[in-house]
Length: 182
Image (cartoon, rainbow, N blue to C red):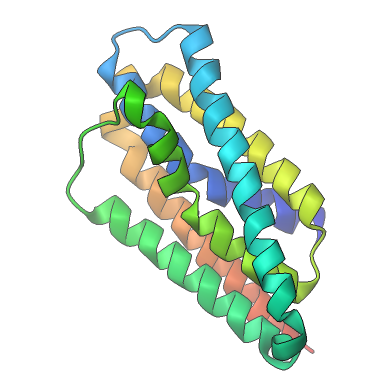
C-alpha cells in the first residue's frame, strides 16, 4: 500500500469516530481539552486494535482466498463505505453518554475490523496501517469533541458520507489494480 492509500484509509476509518465525537461535543457547550483528549484516546486505541484483530482473522484465511483477494477487499470496503453513507443519511441518533463511550468506539470501529480482514489478504503492512488509523482517529475524535458544540449538527453527516465514499473509491482502486490495470 502506498502512503497515500494508508492515509486515505486512516482518514476514512476515523470519520465514524469523528461523527460520534461531534455528537459528544454537541452535548456540552464547551468540552474541555482533557475530556476531548480522553475521548480521542479511547476511540483511537480501539480503532487501532480492530484492524489488527481483523488482520489476524484474515491472515488465517489468506491461503484459501489469494486468487480472489482483490474481490474480497473491494466487497468489504464497498460494503463498509456504503454502510457509512447510509448511516449518514439515516435520521440522527442521540449522542452517546459517558458510560457508552467504549461501546460507541467499538461500534464505530467495526468497519476497521472488516478492513483488517481485507488488508491481510492483500499483504498490507498492518502495523503501519493500525498506527495510522489509531493516530488519525485520536486526532479526529479529539477535534470532533472540541468542535461538536458548533459543527456537529450541521456537518457531521457530510463528513461521514465523504468517508464512506473514500472507502468505496479505495476498494474500487484495489479491484481495478488487480484486474483491468494488472
